[in-house]
Image (cartoon, rainbow, N blue to C red; front, top):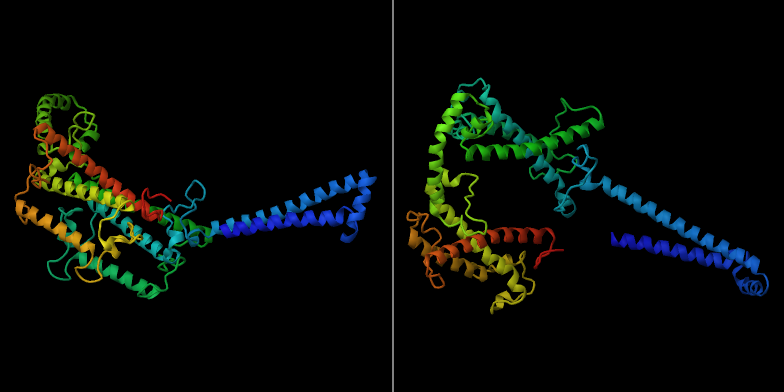
Length: 467
């Protein structure tokens, strides 16, 4: 792009210069260039009027020449922009017919960084979108009507139980195997079209199974149909992900995948008896909330000393739905937080100082190259193996404390490695220290994720990870 702009700029400057020189040599005198000096001298001594008019003409002609060259270069640049705009993502459907004009959305730069993989990206997107559309229909329709097969008439079938109940009991038995067979047939036909290694897959035939039964006859209609499928598929991928997540979290396995309490709130029941019953239960409910508030998340650190009073944040209901796993949740959170804090320090500090080992002195080491350069060449060689050994020692000590199956892990000892070297002596100080570690760990998990993502996307592998 820079070379093209420089070429156009050089062309414009050359055109201006050529016009200026040609006008000065020819248009001022109206004769050959070698006669210019005497004519100019004569004009300077007595023919000011004629010379002035010719100078104005030469200036106008020079400006006109410059304007013509500039206009020509602008036309070329404009045509190039139009071509580039038409070729965005190899011209694949996806940037038109969305209601607000044309747009070209590719913040990660996949279309420009991996043009040879555009067909693969679109094939994968369409396949996932089609599966998601069918899957969402399969979540809702069975509540109203079932397929005419005995195997699917069980009323207990839902999004959580269907897979295990519909596969087996033997190999190849059950509707899930029929579904696998149907998918295999479609994939086999696709392999026949584009090859086993997808070597014939292009941006033009990505996702095209050759089905034209309901396809529009016009090019505009086909473009619109492609866009509709793409948008509906994207929406379905979000919808099926949300429905499955919400259904499991709220233990609501049928449409609209809401908890019973939420459904009652939205049902609009407002009879007097209901209001009386609700008022009578408010006292009990209030006392229960007080008890639960005192015992929130088994009293683990995390809801105090954050600057805005006490709060109890658990929108997914993990603390109430899985109280026996609270220790595991906190152990995992603290471990990830500690690793993230060390990792972020490891992203920044090596730009200023390195460990006194020859293996880590390579100046080309950064967040993208460090792992592969520091592991090997042989098994057990390189600093990455030293790091694995250190982690193994810490994990072994932790297994000794809580058991190989973490059977001794509780909400009270979660994350407690028994290190008291810098621990506060008072209970209040210990509570504050736990809260600080927890909050810094949560912040570090967000920070390391953002730094790695930003560094790779912007190809900026050193702090502050900006282009």
